[in-house]
Length: 344
Image (cartoon, rainbow, N blue to C red; front, side, top):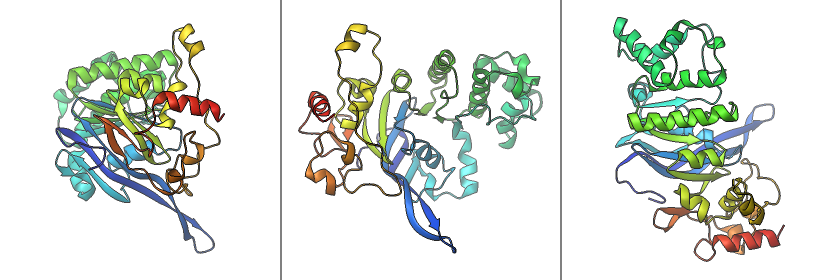
């Protein structure tokens, strides 16, 4: 199973694909397919945070939604421990919703403005028949306190809160049913920088207390490095590289990862002035018409003839370090930097 080991995995994703039909003409015939997710494989362990990064439109959010079966995959498998989610019907999935939840990107659009905070946080507990009456109200108060809000705020409405407070409410709602796995779909992108750090620190604290596993989807690499144990990099629907957070920044093997890492500011001015920036040529291709071979080859500073015709295998080139690159065994990060600068 490429890019994965099954020991103790809470979530296993195997060759996951999600295609959307392109329709046109008078009869709305299918003219092509948008390959939003095109063969992604990874795993997430209990209590672990896997960061999922990449440019806008690379398929991060689609991957997250398909894992939770909010959208059904075109092909591939998703396992919650030994349960294959892709085989379950809607009722089977509903029974498992207490084990996997999501925090959406926009805290302004994800809360019902007609409901109080107490009602919003209590709703999952009511739907799944977990608590009622006084016990329900006590649990809601505990959850609000857990995420750093005054339980007395329970009778207020969403419009009375700031963006950061609304995101805390969404986290409380997601954690109300005590899930094992939580998808955080760009939960800080709509917030001010100072508030972003507070929310990330809150998520880390909650993980230590509750042992919940996260899939943290984001495009801010510095935040992803701060919160994640391992990081997966996506490009045009495919996973380019996956390894632990330190290796991802200190010794990236894929040219795309190297370019992303070079864009993260270093707080040391002397080191920042000395290091080399890698500026990629061109724009990402359309997922409706991806390049042949390696999808990154039109922009790659190390592109070889094989890259144009053969899709690279997403395999383990070092212990715990997976990469989809034909040249991963023959180049290092320094060579990537030199070639990138030469080709600028």
